[in-house]
Image 1 (cartoon, rainbow, N blue to C red):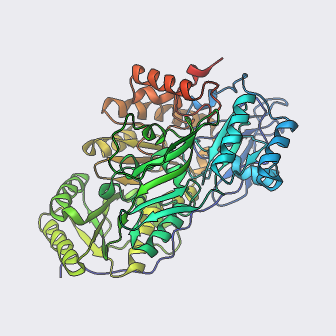
Image 2: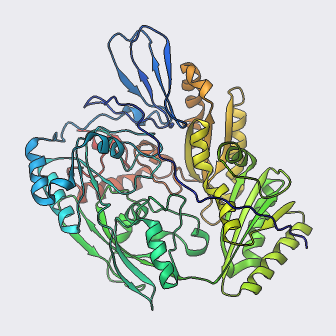
Amino acid sequence: MMMIHRWRRSGEFVRSACKSLSSLRPEHNSMSPSVSGFVNRYESKGKTFQSNAWNDHNRELDLGRNLGMMQQYKSFGSSSASKVQRNPLFSSLEPKDVSYFKEILGDKHVIEDEERLETANTDWMHKYRGSSKLMLLPKNTEEVSQILKYCDSRSLAVVPQGGNTGLVGGSVPVFDEVIINVGLMNEVLSFDEVSGVLVCEAGCILENLATFLDTKGFVMPLDLGAKGSCHIGGNVSTNAGGLRLIRYGSLHGTVLGLEAVTANGNVLDMLGTLRKDNTGYDLKHLFIGSEGSLGIVTKVSILTQPKMSSVNLAFIACKDFLSCQKLLVEAKRNLGEILSAFEFLDNNSMDLVLNHLDGVRNPVSSSENFYILIETTGSGETYDREKLEAFLLKSLEQGLVSDGVIAQDINQASSFWRIREGITEALQKAGACYKYDLSLPVEEIYNIVNDLRGRLGKIHITALSPNNFKTEDCNQIMHMVQVTWQMLWDMVTLETLLGLIEPYVYEWTSKHRGSISAEHGLGVMKANEIFYSKSPETVALMVSIKKLLDPKGILNPYKVLPHSFFSP
C-alpha cells in the first residue's frame, strides 16, 4: 500500500505555565506590557547588565544605561502599545470599594493576595503585565451586574478575565483595572439532545464542555490547543476560530444566543436557542469578538454536533507551498462532507517542535519543506478510511504529496496533533518571540514569510514561519518571529528588529486585503493598528457603539479601539 503506517505514543499536550517575569510592580501611571514575549527591566546598578537564569522560558535582564535612579519597563513588539497612558478620569481603588465588594461577594471571593494577583495580572505568554490590586470572583450574573453597576458609578475601570490564554493583552489589566474573573460561573445549565443546543455559563472550561458532550454523543464545534484552560465566555468574546472551523464555521454561526452585562449593570437576555429568529437586530453579534469592551458575557447557548463514529488523521509531507494549496482544493473536492481539519506547518515549525519538546518525532521518514494534517470525520469507518486513502494515493500520483502516514489509533493521532499544538510551547522554550495573527488570501500567505525573511536577512533569526495556520476558508496565519537569547544583549539590534517588522507586517497585510487579526483579537497590542483592516468610517461607528453602551469607557479600556478616541 502506498501509505506507510507509522506511529508512536505521545503524551497529552500540556500548556506550560511560566512564572512571573519580575517581582517589581510598575508605577501607577505607566504601562508595562512586553509584547514580544519578554520584558527588559532597566535599573541603574553601575554595570552593563546582569544575567539571571530563572526558568526555561524567559530570562530577565538588568541593564544599566546611566539612568540614575530611574526604573521603568520598556515594551517591545508593538511600539504603539507602549505609548498608552492611564486615563485620569478613572478613579483609583479605595478601601470603601473593597468593603462593598466583600459585602456582595463574600471575603473569599475578593482577592487581594499578591501571589494570586501576580498570576492574574500577567498573561500566559508573559507579554503583558498589569498592576491591579483587586480580583473579583462573581458566582452568577446578578453579582456581575452589581459589580459593574458600582464600578460604573465610581468610574472604576475593569477587565473581564476567563482562562487568560489570549495573545494580545486583552484579558489582563493595562494599569490598575479591577479584574473580574468569571471562573466560578462554570455550570452547564441545559442540554437538548434533540437539537444539540448547549446552554452554559461563561466560566466553563472548553475541555470540560467537550467531555460533557462526549458522554452525550456530541462534540463542541470549537477545539483549541488551550482548551484545557480557556473559557467559553472568552472564546465567544474573542470569536476564537480553532481547529474545526473548516467543518463547523465560526462562533458567529454556532452561537445561537448569549447573556451579557453592560457597563451600567444592565443584563441583556439574548440567550435564545433557536436557529431561526429574525426579530429585529441580532445584537449578540456585537458581543461576539468584542473582547469584553461592550459587556461581559455571562451565559452562552451554542449549537453542538452529533459525534461521528469514524475519525481518521493523516500527516503528510509536501515539497512546496503550491502543492499545499492544490492539496487543499483537492481535499475539499474529494473528501467533501467528511473533511474536518486541514492544518499546515513548515519545516521551521517542525524543527522547533523536534528540538524543544520531549518525545516528539517527525511521523514521516523524509524531511520536507511543508507538512499537512488532514482529519476526516464521518459515520462509516470503512468508507471514510478508503476514501482518505484513495485521495492520498491520487495526490501522491499527482506529485502533490511526497510522503505520508495515517494514524492507526487514538494514541497515534494524539502524537500527530502534539506536533501541531506544541508549536507555541516550543517557541516559548526556544526564546523570546514576536507573534502576528494575520489572515490573508491563501495564495499570499507564504509570500509574506519569504518577504520578511529577505527583509530580516542580516539579523540572526532562529525561526520565521507561519504556524497555527489553517489553509482553509478563513485563511489564517499565526506569524512568528523567533529571536535568539543572544540577541537580548544587544538593545540596538532589538530596536532595529522591531523597526523592520512593524509596521511592515501590517502594511503588507493591508495591501493584500488581509486582516491584522485573524482570530485572537486586537487587545492592547493592535488597538491603534485597526485602520490597517477597517476604514475610518467603520471605526468611527465602532467608537459610537462603544460610547453608547459604555459612556465612561470602564469596560476593558485601552483595548480594541484606538486610544486617541478615548483620551480626556
